[in-house]
Length: 150
Image (cartoon, rainbow, N blue to C red; front, side, top):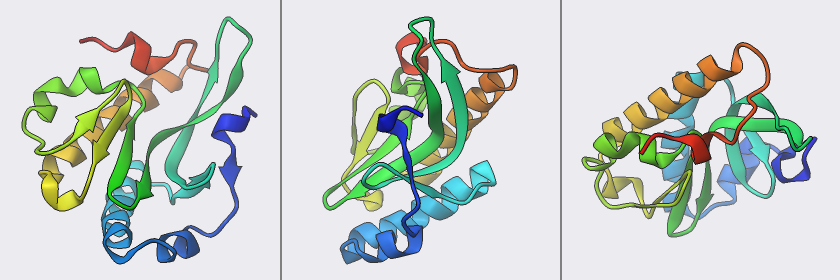
């Protein structure tokens, strides 16, 4: 397995409890949302990413591993929500989301009260469904966010 996507056996509950109060509250809301969407309990990845469900990838370069389908990384003052199939694909929803910034597959939110939570849920739901459908016929063979429609 690729070291950058290694799952961690630490307790999700203990991890969330170690966060500051606001980040822990936001994390509980996101955990409930993503668990409802995916039907999977969260797993810790790397140093603090909470991931829900996985897909397998295998690129022509020979690189192979497992990635999270949906997830987030809670930090004080900035929560990163991973949109693994690319934020550009969801520009219509992002226009209505509220205060955030993005990169290729990361959506950065300071606090959940800064955004329209039902809009975020639609983005996460659509991203989950898209990646899940692409991964049903075997490994994903390209980096999804780099191939997203703009």
